[in-house]
Length: 352
Image (cartoon, rainbow, N blue to C red; front, top):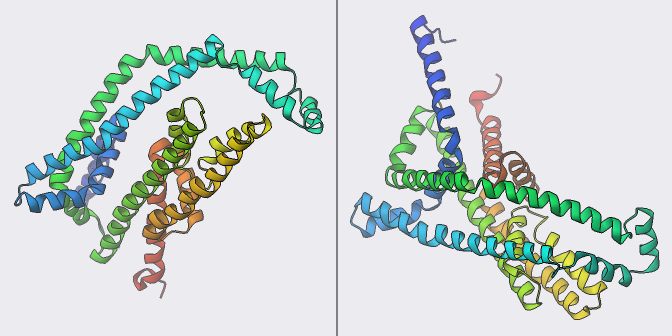
């Protein structure tokens, strides 16, 4: 066992304390730092290509990559978010003004159901329209209060969002330009042999690229297809539902069916047979196949993880870390597998 002197012990304690303090200082903008690192890893190949085309001018290559990220990622997301807020506000106003009558929709569905289903619902007091409307009114009041509270905090949240965006873009520029040097310094600081560090870092970058590209592409494809079929069938606020389906598509095996399946059932029970049949066929054969075909290829193949582990790590990560968890969960799972594979395969760690 290595014996440390008092001076070495004090320095290790000091190193741990300043590291914890530094991490604590960065916590308010941990999300911006996290996505800066993710985008730097994701767009590093593009930066290297631009670096060759600009004749090894790192500042120019990093700036061009940053501009492309803004145009390709940040601006489209901002425009979609603005349209989403507009459609959500429109739906909210239509519900308040009575243009969308939830009670009437419920009554139409109730009349179309078989009698045995109506009797079953009656046992749970789910057929009393007055009671249902009261519950909906209470729920709407709670939603209104929540929206009002959020509206009052919009100024501070907008400022925090702009500061976080600036931090992410500022950090991203330096991560693109100096990423290889920073990665080399981190690797040299880790007290492991070169082959262990190389494998762990390779797994880390591979999983981040596969998870972000795979999940985002699958979610975008399913959301776009779902919004397109909703627009074709005349469903109100198709962009709103497209974004909801895209978000739910981040969860493997759950996906967009949570949205389109109830709409298809509503079409069928209210007599819109061809709309319901078209939506079910499109949802199963097109939207569902996108998830079944693309996700294993884009996520599971590169990460070399089974589908069930991708699912569990994604759901667990999102439960703990929110939206960031769809990247953090699979990365932790992949590093877990890599560390145990190294432990099992390496003689240095085996008992003699």
